[in-house]
Length: 462
Figure: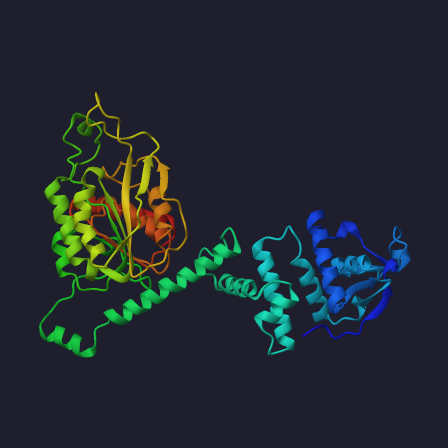
């Protein structure tokens, strides 16, 4: 609904433009806009009058004109280009407060120095003002009023709604389009979680049958409504024994950092570099863990979920022979390139110093189930120094946060089957994961990980 205040015919040469108070586009773009607008006005006329204001001469000593432009400079210049001597104009003094606000907002969104957050806030205010005076006002109407296409208005209004709601990561996005994509992907993850909950909730009959059979449900994942203690978050359990018995809700993110099965402590360099207790690491254990994961994955990983799996390059083919079966069965879809952590402190082992270079990076597979969408885009490589003060194969939190940033938000429930120092659990909690559960077979490492998690939560005020 256009502003209904009557317009006046004002001589164009009597309208003064206060250049210092106006935001200018670059001259080439400005001139192109004026020429395009002039063609439109010549064809259909001036639909929206410009807005001017009276200025008493004694209050504006350097300006001789009695009338100054408030809004509509391109329309004014287009009419001047067409040779018009007069132009329809509304006086700001005659407008209602709502009309004045609309004009100011519509002029404001044309500024080149606005952040996208400020621009969509102005669009939202414009839409609400028009909607208040016309209940049938649509996104398309706002698009026409702001000279934008309807899809852009719809995107802006959706993003502003998410910002007002406080949806994580939206307001801090680099562009409005990126913010919109974050919101849409979150919708998809939320829908996946809702579907999983519906599918995994037992019926009353199933629950009664379990009770009658005397079945005891093993510990499940903690919920945000009552943050689990470190001893409940990190269990002193063997994944090989725990996984076949687990019957709790599935996880929508599984982070696997199994022992690589390469006996890294067997050589002199491996032994010399260790300052903490070593752990069992041999091919048999590695493949037992991989087999256990594959066999139980349909129950452990939600129908909409992600798997991140660290592996050693020499065992890649054998690893994919096991996990790749999940891909061929349609359970998992793998990202075609590895995620890479480059050890920026040049830490690594040269297994054959006289022939081969030192190996200073580690790789992980990324897979999804059920078309699980990511939280945000990040690069598939990251450089950071090692952090082996607690556990010899700790993945540093900065590395994990970089990769987890694609996968973890407040909708995430995460399992780490061999959590070691617990750094993955701490990284996930810092990113807002709603629930985390880690297993660690070593009682000493388990206690160390619980201590670090407790200190981490104290520092964060949890």
